[in-house]
Length: 483
Image (cartoon, rainbow, N blue to C red; front, side, top):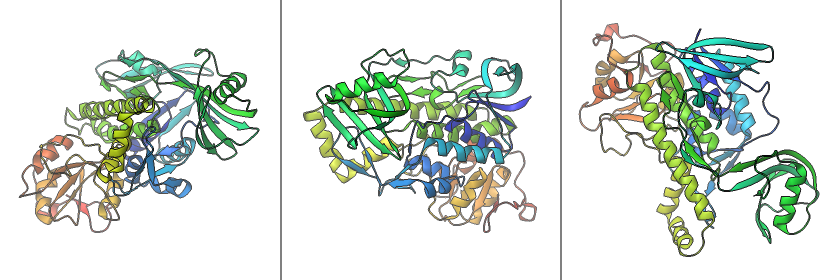
């Protein structure tokens, strides 16, 4: 028996494994493919994803390899959305292959002790009050494995979601598109080219181009090079010879969301929890966001230190965030089909500095704000705390809450010393959750701090200790201490 089984070794599953192992949770990752695919689905990490990864020291190696893009696009509007001045420590998107992101996350998870089993497919599950038993298929047969929790990070056709009986309502695909990583015989211009038969979108890649165009064919059959060639020629109105095709696929504009992200001892994240049109290239980023929100909550639940409601806040927060992503991507698709007064109005709004920033923060998730307990109207509450080069950047790497503030807050927080590190610096006082979101801000006195600590970390197990009995943390950076 293990503590957590994760189905799927994509970005969500691998980051979740990193987070669980950081907390010492026994973790097995089951991946049905025996090896990572030789094609790449995505090439983009947005500013919010980089902010989250930076909290565990995972952003720097990616930034060192990728290329920075200091702006974003909003559908077909002829306006560049600048990321400078937005709510982020990383005011750019990072061009980097999804496969490389997965490699770095897998290396990190394995180094921390995660058991990653490739070529092992979760085929079935049955949960009871104490755990979940799964059936796993391999090339050599089947075996059963039991865990306290199972997390489905196994994509849009999630076996975990189906086996748990979780509905996946939404809108079906109404428009299909073809995507090909191909080597054409002649150069194709970057961006959108409109031909007599439709639009062709071209993105240059090292040694090849990614081409997207409408799919006029049989949406059930595998995409062939000949079919893709015909669709491209029809759109452009002239023949373009494809010398080689590295990867061919199709995608639709369906938008669906699981009705529950948590059901008993089964949890969903990433595409298993939501699918949406690919506008904004946000899929991988939302998956990482799910995993980062879930990791510390599930770890505390497994360890028995979490308040009873904590795992449920994963559904509350990320289901609402997922609904906003679906609405945003669907709106961008509709806008791409719109011209005239509406497009003109939104273009004028996007050219205004305030509107430009609002659009940029919305499509990248930088405006994400979770409910605070106790509630308050401070603008930092519920937002991701920016770290800069301050102590928070280092303190958050331990995966615990962080309390920044003067010494008079230490005694209040001492009963939660297992969960919260005390750091220097912020005279007002700031409680930051393990996922970087601000849970409490001191504006006058220390009112609400105990309530916030209890809400996110459970009731204290001991009374406050005298100063000479305070625990120490050998792993905490200089200038910090456990509360």
